[in-house]
Picture 1 (spheres, chains in turn orange, cyan):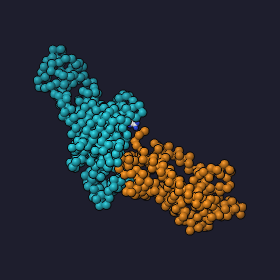
Picture 2: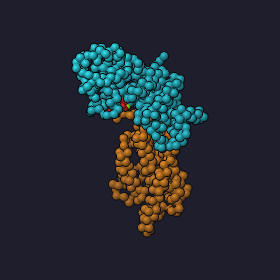
Picture 3: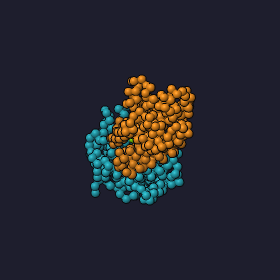
Picture 4: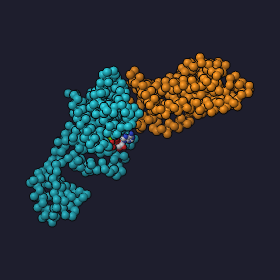
Amino acid sequence: MQAFTVMFYRQVLRFFRARARVVAMILNPLIWLLFFGLGWSRVFQSPMARVIFGGVDYLTFLAPGIFAMTLFSQSFIGGVSVIWDKQFGFLKEILVAPAPRAASIAGRIFGDATLVTLQGLVVLMLTFPLAHALKPAGLLPSLLLGFLMALAFAGLGTALALKMESLEGFQMFMMILILPLTFLSGAIYPIGAMPGWMQALAYANPLTYAVDGARHYLVGASAARFALALDWGLLLLLALGFLLLAALAFRRATLEG
Amino acid sequence: MQPAIVAEGLKKRFGRVEAVRGVSFEVRPGEIFAFLGPNGAGKTTTVHMLTTLLRPSAGRAEVAGFDVVAAPTEVRRRIGVVFQDPSLDRELTARENLYIHGRIYGLGGPALREKIGEVLRLVELEPVADRPVKQFSGGMKRRLELARALVHRPRVLFLDEPTLGLDPQTRAHVWDYIRAMKVEAGLTLFLTTHYMDEAEALADRVAIIDRGEIIALGTVEELIRRIGGELLYLRPEGKGRCRPLPGVRNCRELPDGRLLLEVEDAASALPRVLEALLAGGQRVREVTLRRPTLNDVFIRLTGRELRDELTRPGPAGWRGRR
Ligand SMILES: Nc1ncnc2c1ncn2[C@@H]1O[C@H](COP(=O)(O)OP(=O)(O)OP(=O)(O)O)[C@@H](O)[C@H]1O
Ligand SMILES: [Mg+2]
């Protein structure tokens, strides 16, 4: 357990040391909300548009999406720190320690997920004044659901990074995954409006269920597409699966290759 | 007493490269044991196998009484490692690095805080303990790594090229720390180096490793005694040529034209050698007398200079990157 808490602590320490990262994490969703959301909300002012967005204005529709998107990309990008640890050698320090490998990698993933969820909280606090229709009561459950998703993607990012030699390789995965999954999640336009083949992809996209759950809590049940149980169930499975994957990848890690 | 390290026929193969080709040795508790060898000899690979980070392709090894493959966790509990390449968290301060290390090894509370203070004092880093490591010089980082490896009171300490890339002054300092560590009761040290002076200065026993094999093992005295006698450097007029000379066991022509002669006893051999050379028409302008060093042992065993490896990379295949 010591290894879990200390690796958790290390992620937190490192996060707050990197001021630029703290600023970027708040700026990025704000840019989406203001320059993307506010702009399009002017375009989508007709009653017709409100129907498309489930009876709410565009900014209210978009806000849970930006929240989920932020958590998703930030938690996945957390894997980069594993690559740094490889390159700066710190990973060897962990590999040669007697602590259970699963505990230390889990501590790191939970640390990342917690930090990312805090970012989500900041994002939502900034969002409430802009999107008036959001329900404050949805804040807590959204954060919990977001935490689960952050665990899943921090786990995936970490597992992938453990297999990568270079930052470039990981960046390739970031390119391949982050934007398409965001577009295919219903975060910025409704899944119902997508062509059939795109909808199929959206259903296969885990981010979809995080967006859906967040929308359920923050906007209302009518804005959601799936049952809450499905959102929670899928994300829970995914979090467990990716945590396990990361633990296995780390348990086998040597200096080979 | 049970040996601190036992290696039996330890081998490691990377694809087609055989980095370590079956090394066997024992390290006694409390001794400083050095692996001395040129670049690519297989020193780091051996350290990685002994510290459970690489799985041997063949052979076996025990550290602190536990098998490195069968009981890696038991081994890890009892060892401290300073890797050849830095392994610090550069974003954190020295103290934070030590704290995290201690916690990973299951320590905590006032005992850990006290130990951290103690190791920081040992390597004289107390004044900079709260500065981020990325601001440290190479020597400071090295000292911090030495300190960190001691926090959890290991029984066996591995130091892979502890003074690589440090200036002479810092090296001497690090040597002092290493000697001070040995004083700590029961600590066994396994260190690798390609500096012969480092092996001579620190090690109780030395294994000379070349191309994945141990080619000689013993105390520095024993190894040097294998050469025996003394070394004479003669600078003849013109280029020196080796030929049978009285009292000379071994002769080498050096690139600078000098002759390197191994003799039993220089005082009695020198007059006869000079006489014989003169009779052969060769005048000698300068004579230097020297006691043999580990470098001479290496030359005798391999026909190459250990020292050369420091300054210029050998031809392809030479460094083992075959
Ligand atoms: N992961 C690896 N994959 C392939 N070859 C490797 C690997 N690690 C080491 N080698 C090769 O094994 C040989 C021994 O390398 P090693 O690092 O053990 O030497 P060394 O004695 O530590 O040298 P140096 O003084 O340069 O540190 C070299 O030929 C090296 O190229
Ligand atoms: Mg090495």
